[in-house]
Image (cartoon, rainbow, N blue to C red; front, side, top):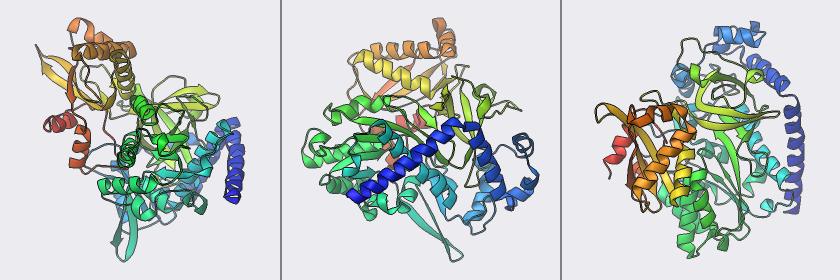
Length: 503
């Protein structure tokens, strides 16, 4: 164990030095990756189509190469999955992350190249530990085991060639370096089980007997595992089971709705919560300071970044800018070019910059997860903050929620309809609705204007549903576990109507 910890310590120190370099020279690092990505791909079918050999500047790249959605790249990805290679990226690609950023029935299969695994995702994992250790030099997390909640993989064989698809977390777990694998629990067979409820049962049975010091995962599913461990152990808080537990590495959703519940699960004893921004398409951000609510934008992972101001998303010729042009507190849609062959790809997330020296960001929402029924432009960041304020005022906790529009109500006035799963419903639901409504007004001036004297928008409608409702819905959709998440907002009623049918 001492030798292993020495190896880990050496890796951490080396990465901290490299992180300091891209913090000091951010634009130079991004320029270098831009050149490297085009050079690697110049002889691919895509690279030849857009004449990568003769692109010398970022401006030429923007003029020549179109912005891509998944639907734009899908024909190329499908060909690669069928066995063709050198289409979008020069190396053989046999791994595909089955994207689950929403609960939509249509899956996306994101190519994961060897370059992406090594230069992006694994480097992100090392940097996550490096930045945490740098902020907590007294840490003891390497003296115990770690838990990572992965999904499952399946093997598809086409023309005698195998390729693998599944949650990104499962793909990474199957490719982990030895020094990480030695610290992980449970074994691969259990971690990658496809039947989610059986997997949680077995994971809890195994991990409750280990000295777990760290966990990584989406908050909602991690909480399911912790509660199962408590149920099986008969203990009142997880610190009784894992007394040396130190840090929960989280990402994928806003943590604030879950914070009080996690604190209770840990018996309100000191535990660190550390944020990451890791998606199927790449590893983009990591918290780098204690008690921060933003993340360092990671610039040396084989990802070249561009940004679209969110108010130009639906225009014919949106202004697209580079890192050197971004401004503080402006909502940007993220555009990425990656070492897995995603070219000027709209990932679907929106971010804001909280610092320019170094570049730090917050994830503000999804380009498709918003409500804009009457021009109110309500985004997930607004909703998360408003829910937190209403919960604090009414002394309640929310497990999950989703919201969407009602277009015809009372003389053609619209409103927002919410389905909320409380730990325990508010004693005064009208007071909660009022608190939520007022908080939304305070965080979004367009919403406030539309709510003025109920002239355009009426007060929100809120349905309180029983514990386990969203779990039941996700199970019905075949979306339990892994990176599957409840969509917070939608500009249609698909999710609302499906859940309302269950209650």
